[in-house]
Amino acid sequence: MPVTSVRLSDNLLKELDSLAEDQGVDRSTVLKRALKAGVREIRIDEAIKKYQDGLVSAWRAAWEARVSLWEFVDVLEKRGIGFSTSDEDLEEMLEEL
Image (tube, rainbow, N blue to C red; front, side, top):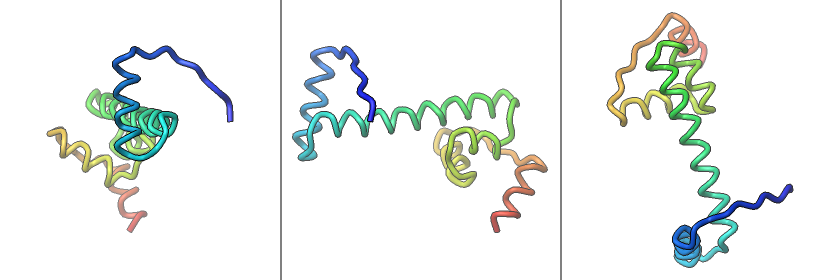
């Protein structure tokens, strides 16, 4: 696995160490989990922006976010964003059933 180095503030390192201690794992494990969660959120945020701008369907946005359509719709609902279905979305939903 490749190694990447980053510069982090003392405060962030303290937060990572605190989480690591609370979870009974090392700092590296906490950092990997945080990065994975952060990348996921960034993908979802970018997909939502494209969806809201009308650039992609909900189905395509979910695919770009690497989540299921159902999970994408759930995120939209939690964020108070309206969901409308396109013909493409309806076809894909029917295929999933």
